[in-house]
Length: 483
Image (cartoon, rainbow, N blue to C red):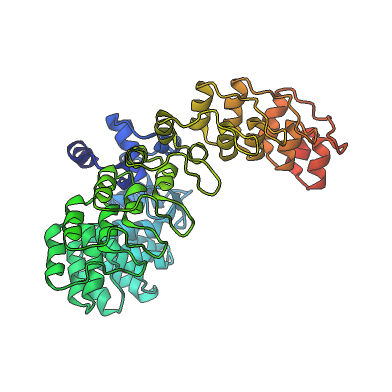
């Protein structure tokens, strides 16, 4: 973790490229401030008691991690030991892993052999793929006897940077994934693919992902099509934009790369930059003629994509370059998109450029209605803090609180209630909040509302109580509250 922190301190990479668990440790161990969009996930890591050491000492999991045979034997002799135990931990490639899979992942051959010999623990196909990461030839050979090779094995060999494994799997007709080569900075694997491939253009389309101008120049000198594409019709420039490789982008554009080339989703390179908050790249592409009003196959512009991903600097760049900040997408204003997607920072930029904070759509809904529907807690707090009416009704007589309850967004509902939302409201059908919760089978919300003193026997316009609605739909948990 010290190395990760050192890299962060020296280069300040975008959080988009850092594993969420690393973001959590950067925050908790080194007090690095993290964007609001990562806070909720960090809270879940804290609740799960994740630690830098991964596993506590003197546990079977720690013994496997260290391939500590003596400690593993002690653990295996305990009465509660089961060789088919499962560990649930988001720090691993899969949320759930068995002990034997953990052995293959760490290359813990001593613990592996004990499980196989003493407990006859069965191998899984996951064991084989993890073994190419763990790097134990002994484990790999055992797994090959019983498991089926897959392209995932090659993926883990690429991650391990083991050329011998990659060459072996190539002989078994497995394919090198060039995107994974770039993700895990395995240039050697990329060159092995190139050496065994007769499609120069295809290799070139991925070369920009390494952010090495000389590598791209090599392919250009070989006569590659500057707008060569991969299976998704993504050019080298599109990929350069996605990783903010400005120097590479300059090289490609100077050699004639089309800044408005559309991929299979009709997205241009500016989309790749906009969704990742690469505002420098966005500005550069615009300066080279990138169209800012182009839309993808869904009719969404890069500006709207930037809002959805809360890329405030990109939103600012688009507005500064003449994009109309009131442009709707799918009949939603930019403010509504921001409110629905927890994009607080993007919302602030829109407001600073004159967006109407109090806008109401044709359904009579304000931004609080929108944030309540999606349970956007931070947006809800922000809107309330700036004076938006928590009791505004839309044309159906629904308040933002009603929408929060319909979506079972308990925390958002509590924010609204503590901020003065009317808990005794009825919609146009005379449903009270308990009726709303009952219709959606929101048991946690239902119980919470009961504690607030709402009338469980109140009838709506159809003459039905909340419990009547629950009985009609066999919502047993809600019915049990009455009993």
